[in-house]
Amino acid sequence: MGPAIELDSRAAGAIDGRHIRALTFQDVRMEYVTSVLNRLDIPCSGRTALVIGSGRGLLAQGLARLGLGVVALDPSREATAMAQEADTGSVQYMTARAEDPGLADASFDVLFYADTFEITDDLDRVVAHAARLLRPGGVLFYDTVNRTPLSRLIYLGAFQALPQTRIMPRGRYTAARLRTPAEVASALAAHGLKNEDVCSFKPTNVLDLVKATVARRSGKIDDRAVKEMTSFILEPEGKPLVTYLGHARTKH
Image (tube, rainbow, N blue to C red):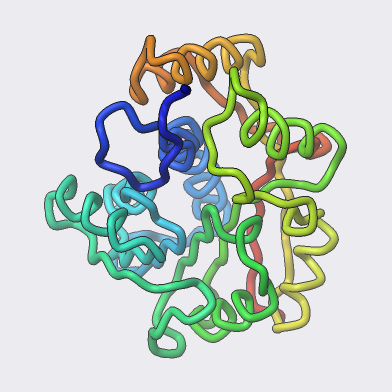
C-alpha cells in the first residue's frame, strides 16, 4: 500500500500535493508579482491584497513581506488553521470558497488566484467576484494550468494516476477544468477585466523534478527537500505548455 494522498493533512507521512506545489511555485509567483508591480509603478505600502486559494499561507506571507496588507482565503478549514499557526500575525486568514468569498466590493488593490482557476467548476462566478472585489487601478494575478497534451500527461497522469509519482487525490484535476490562455482571457473580459500578460513558467530541470517527486512519494524526503531539489523559472516569451501566470486590470 502506498502513502496516504491527502490535501491539508496533519497526518504523519501524508503527501499533500497542493502544499508541495505551493512550495515549488513560491519563488516564481513572487518574482512575477514583484516584477509586474514594479513595472506598473504600484507601491505595496498602504495597499491591500487578497490571496484566493491560499492553502497554508506561503504566498500570503510572501506578499505581506512586500508591505501589503494581506487577507488570505481558502476553502479548507484545516489549511486555514495550519496557516494561522505558522504565521506571525502578518496576514488575516479566512475560510471561504472562491465562488462565494463574502467580502465587500472594491476591497483590494491586488488579487492573486492560486490553485483556483484549474479547480473551480464555475470560472465565470469566480471571475465575477474578482471584478467586484478589485479596486479601480488594481491588478488581478493568477496562475493556472493550460489544457495541452503535455499538461494532461503531467496533471491527469503523473500527478493523479501513476503510482510512482502520484501526489494529488484522483479527480482534483480534470481536462475540462484546465484552461487555455484564451479561455481565461475571455472569462476575464466578460466581467470588464483586460488580460494584459501571459507568462509561462517551467522547471529549471525536469529530471530533478521527477526525481524529487519519486523520492517524496516513496518517503525518502520531506516537503522542504522537494523545494531544495527543484526550481522553476519564468519564461515570458515561451508558449505555456503546462503552467502559466498572468495578470489583468480593469478595462478603461
